[in-house]
Image 1: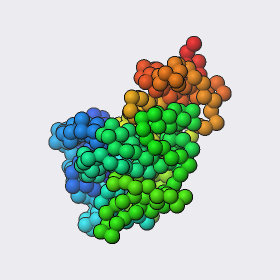
Image 2: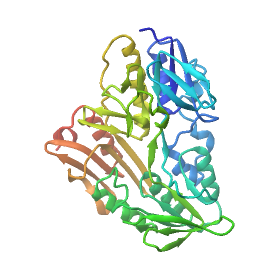
Image 3: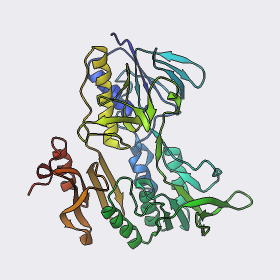
Image 4: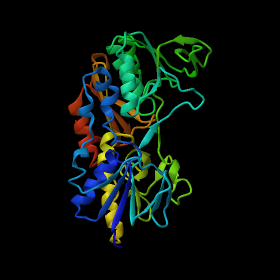
Length: 402
């Protein structure tokens, strides 16, 4: 099949890397990149850290490849929000009722922060996902330090709490789970993160939920009521309760969706439709399970894999599976937390380096004779070597030698 036109939906990190991969593979036809926003997205990892602290400025948030759009001969269309899609003829419908069609589509629409639908929009209540929201929160935290409540002790919540404490704010962090970062980190490491925050002055409330924000008569935030009925006073309230893949526009399109776009092991969701980045849920044969990863390296790698898969599909080639080792990192206070792999709660946690008491340590997570993950705190070399080893083998002795 001849691909004379390809649509990439989403000028995300994954979308830009898909565009570059198409050109590097020698495909030189019409490439349209649709972006819902009025400007290109920014690099998100610094938003909850250096940008909030004032050590990273806007000009340093530009996505890699953003400056290469002209050189890559990309037909970039901003303010082009897609509202519908028909997989049978690769046709997208935009918010303004315009329609575009192509011979192949790459979906890289990313994810959006979860919000609490019943909560009103009010000054002082923030989520942190894009530059505009980060700028508003940065301005709020630049005021005379007072009290901030962070809802959610995942990566975003924990990093915002760390940044707010560094700026002198009194911080309370509310988490419904029994340890921070429970969705991605085993309990042993979650306990370390809890101690890290408490030792740095964060009032961490675990096994606790929130009810409603408390507003004055003029709509000014004055606090939040917790699920147990108690109340906390605060001037800033930050929601860090996770993100959801941007797939609503695909309902009824013929593209299967659940926790993201349901792809096969090659990132193909339907004939001529591939997905990359936060939005793609695929079967990872290396780990033998389906996964969706909201992480920087995955966006870069999957963008390239998805682009090459679309080209191979057009040539009748079955393509190669996307074999990825999940990789997460987070900077909180004086701790650099890095994890390679996909451990489960039932995996055996083995201390393989250092000691938790020293704040420099690494755990390996064992399942039979396989290493399902390595978590390192202030041991970056150990984490990087483990990631490299896991890319070729999950055998315990190969990942954790000696």
